[in-house]
Amino acid sequence: MSSRHQDVEYIPLDSGQPSPARRPFASAKYAGHLFLATILFAGVLVGGAIGRWFIGPNVITTEIPSSVVPEPVQYEAVVTLLDSFVDMCVTNPSLSMDALILFHASNHASPAQYPNSTTTEHNERAVVTSLYTDGYAVAVATLGHALTKVNTDARKIVIYLPDRISDVAVCYLKEVGWELYPVNLIEPPNHGEGIWPAFIDQYTKLRIWTLDTLGVKSAVYIDADTHVRRNFDELFELPFVFAASPDVYTDERGFTINFNAGVMAFKPDSKVFADMLSKVESAHFDRIAAEQSYLNLYYGSQVLRIPHVYNGNLAIKWRAGPYWNAIQDQLRIIHYTLVKPFNGGVNCAGEVCTAEEVFGLEKQRNFLKSAEEAWGGAFKDEVREWGASFEEMMRAVGDKCGE
Image 1 (cartoon, rainbow, N blue to C red):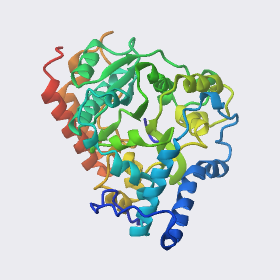
Image 2: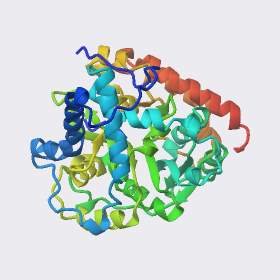
Image 3: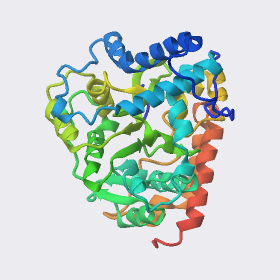
Image 4: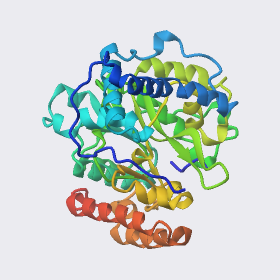
């Protein structure tokens, strides 16, 4: 989905330095560091609540009942995370908040811990995306190929509208490893009043919270207009019910407190889904950005804001080039918010799209050339990176789904 639209030093998460020996909390020598770590950890927990105050009208008007909130963080997990904070502060007090927030995840949930794709843990984790028209089928297929290439140790599930997706698109999705989960459309609240036309189907995304019915306990949602550059399996281990990166705009809003819904780590729960639907009609939020605005309202007090390396919104490059360059070594996901490297507006001649209409190589190559020049060529490198992944996908499965 499109972004609903400095010079910064970035501290790498993977420093390569060995973890120091554990220090006892009772040691007076590190009392100051423990205090700092405690303050930082408390800041993570209450940051969302403070953000609600700043955001103003974009806040939850009715509290989420405790009966539908996922299980709270276990005490042991909190202690472990806090202990890791202490060690990090002792050895490198200049570390950024971004590094601290994900230190525990990146050092204790590396992909190497999940080598067996048939394990229970694998079956309970999923990378999820959505597909509402054939125009985005090439993007979902390319995303599936990229996920396989980075060796994610999770299921790949796509929610889709079966009455809108052609058989050839379904074939490609299966060939690159997606599990297909057919769902019904969720109409926008208030008959779509105030919504941006391109987002009219986006409330259907809320159905990803029903993936617990497929046995999924931890999930990462990724919009189809993305490219996965590096493995991000550490997100499955976050001890929070919801996490997303702060949004970025090219206009005066710039870097914001609100999060972008293009990449989200969450815990599927059908009870939460039912609660979302029960409140969306009466909730007060900016309707133009559809489900993204509603999720900012719904999870405003619970969201863990994760670094932009997990949602590399192209607006970052446009607005803060030095920052964009600084995070390249850690960037996991590129989000094509400002320019699409594929033709999402495919119109098929007949009732059923053909392989050529949706996945035609020459059609796609011509579109890529025009996309490279968009925004004055500012995103040429990123468009070409997606194009290379598309070409790899087509070489792998392009001859398996016929015309």
